[in-house]
Amino acid sequence: MTEPAFRPLTVGEILDQAFGLYRRYLPALVIIALVCTAVPQIGYAFVLVRAQGPAGLLAVWWEYLLLLLALVIFGQLAVGASTVLLSEAYLGRTISTGEALKRAWGSIGSIIGLSIATSLVIGLGLILLIIPGFILLSGLAVATPALMVEQGLDASSAMSRSWALTKGSRLRIFGMLAVTFLIIIVVVAGGSAILGVAMAATGSLKNMNPEHPSTVFSIGVQGLSLVVRTFLTPLIYCVLTVAYFDLRVRAEGFDLEMLAGSLPG
Image (cartoon, rainbow, N blue to C red; front, side):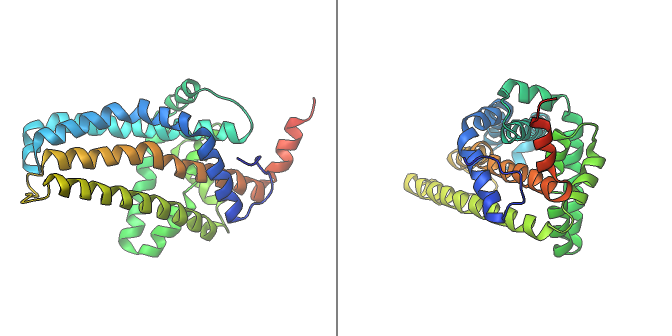
């Protein structure tokens, strides 16, 4: 990873910094993801396999809802803890995964509230007109880093903060997100192709009923989902974290603030 540059960065430099963070801190990010989501994801997969299709979920509905709720809560804990870890790392400070999880847990209500609010706002924008949805996605992209880095913010003020910071830079933010999601989609498509080939080789695709998918298919899909959550999703956090600090440099002269903070009293 190149040293953090507290000056306005190009899109290529932001992605370079983000990939550097991803490579350097992937083990810690994987630990956070596994601690937060592995057990709920495995339990969720086990319930789906037992249900053997949508119709069978009625028999295990309470287990399904409980595990889905746990997956949402601990998934958001992973988002917050990963953002804390990456933010501290980008600023040149060291923090353990345990401390990152502890700090994120202290704000878990705000993190979940922010996730729900942004999902509803962006989803509504995409439903009404696609382009406003993309604008909202770009404008609210750095709400989570703002929430985790700056003190005194709640979900609403973090959204407002993100909207203000991204003013004039939303097209750049959208471009960075598009490149990141494209990379993830390509990797997931490759994994899905490998899964399909493996299932075809074992005969699991023959006469498969959508209402009662095979156990191999269900386990494969859930396994792929776990891999995406664990290894690929952190790349998004890296891009948004670097983009957040770049926006602060552009809007607030954060480079001067950092320089002042490094000087003796």
